[in-house]
Image (cartoon, rainbow, N blue to C red; front, side):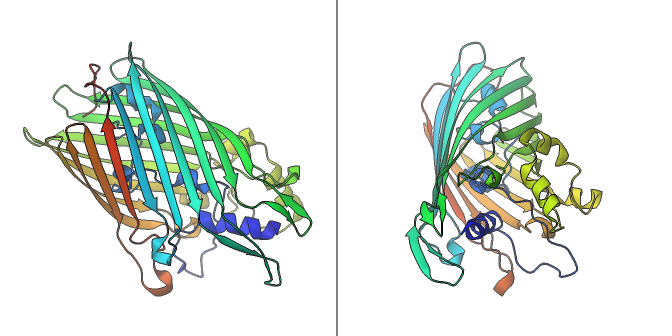
Length: 385
């Protein structure tokens, strides 16, 4: 059953991958528990290839970079997003719901919070002979609270604390007792606001997210799994086209701060991989790939995207996400649109289908729907446009 559970975690982690990988390349995906923490949680970023570190702040900023919230245009906002997940595979009961918001305080400070809920549908568990054991409805959720502060009119910093709950199996199965896993993690972020008074300029950010404990689904201390600690760096250029039109385009680069699985089946190598401390794993993740430097480079994920803004009323977005073939093979184009009316905003994103037959991207046709509510007056601090 433990092998089944880990196989399930692996399936969810690389469910976005295209299976037609060249046979001459060695597949070695960096896997973690609770991969829902790495799924793009809002429609705006989803429309730009999962770009979000250095974009202008909105209600979902806490998912991407806490430090940009002091520069947000609105004083208080709330965002809600619904994402049907893996619909292209015929799964109708798997979805992600997120809620997030912030409130700017005096003296260029802000507080924020967010919630993610991932419903994994109904799963039929079996033993190694294929006999049915039980049906279960796996689910995961996380909640975080954050604080951010503008140190100047150009620099912001942010921190967040997150509680994670993952319930993938329950009860005594084939002699092993399974239970929900819990973990605690935090984010540290930095934001640079180089936007000039007219609205053009550069923004950039650095985020270390999900820095926290391992998670376990049994009482066996040797069975703890890594959560998706991540380093993200992003930059964006904002250009004023005319009195009513703006264009922003940028790039994010992300890398999991998680050990690369060893290619060897040697017991000592596997033991070292599983029992490495969390802190040491963050640092060793930059040099532990069995394939050396070339394999380490393949562990970086890249998002590029653009947003066209007409008079802060209508938005058009497009982006591309890239991940190496041997590290999950997520590669997709996405498009999106948005509209603001008074205190209400709506965003939509769509993942463009790619591949054919067995090579079809399982995330093809993924849609996201976000609602944004402006609850306060326009902020008086320096804003990112």
